[in-house]
Image 1 (cartoon, rainbow over the protein chains, first blue to last red):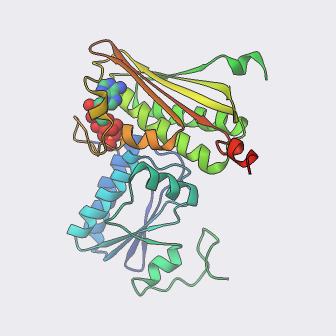
Image 2: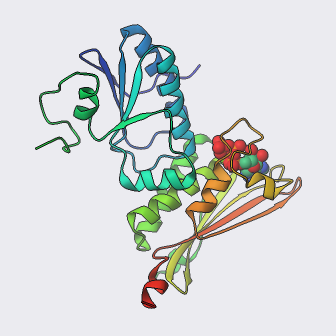
Image 3: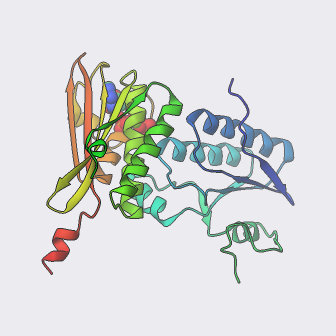
Length: 131
Length: 146
Ligand SMILES: Nc1ncnc2c1ncn2[C@@H]1O[C@H](COP(=O)(O)OP(=O)(O)OP(=O)(O)O)[C@@H](O)[C@H]1O
Ligand SMILES: [Mg+2]
């Protein structure tokens, strides 16, 4: 059994928001997968927003963890939206051959929430919300 | 450039937290060598893939990072060395989707696309050395011809 991840899972009016911060050792990534899936089940959320705007690298291991979180959430009837991928990370993932086909994407947390019909009042943390 | 920078930096790869150290060292040196953000990200990602292979398939080893100079200017050479089982069929291992470990099988083939030079030396039961080179500005020569 893995130790719990230190990454908070926030409940955002029926949506779950996970903001991955900085360097993520493999073990924490696996713990994250377990925590997030449990949170989806426990809260009955229909949506999961994963914010990766602080990540400066996503390798195939983390990409796979993200894809598996999305796949298991989908089986629990929640849709996953990946938010805030940096352009350099997007270019690298495509060249690596990983396009994360099963995942929806959005520019900002606000935009992702809107796709679930949830309105977030303040500009989101990434500072890239509509002015 | 100082003498210290010409010596390869050796980062052990023994446990999964060492992968973080490899990524950090490669990124720091790439920044100091003048890599742009995309070039940097590609090399760090390739290093992460290859270091994980060293750990998982090679039973651990080390990364050796050094600054090199080529016709387009400076670059980084990173070698991933282990004394594990080796790769019996390198060409097969390099095909997209091939994995003996239930992985995605994109690590080796994908890394190769992310760097400018890529070489595998592997002896059955004698270990594996994967060396990649990425140039800080791989297009500078081409731009010069315009
Ligand atoms: N250092 C190594 N020592 C021995 N075998 C290796 C080594 N690196 C790669 N291989 C072999 O090459 C195969 C392909 O490697 P690759 O990184 O592409 O895929 P993977 O590690 O199996 O999966 P992924 O990286 O997508 O999670 C591995 O499954 C393994 O058999
Ligand atoms: Mg691999």
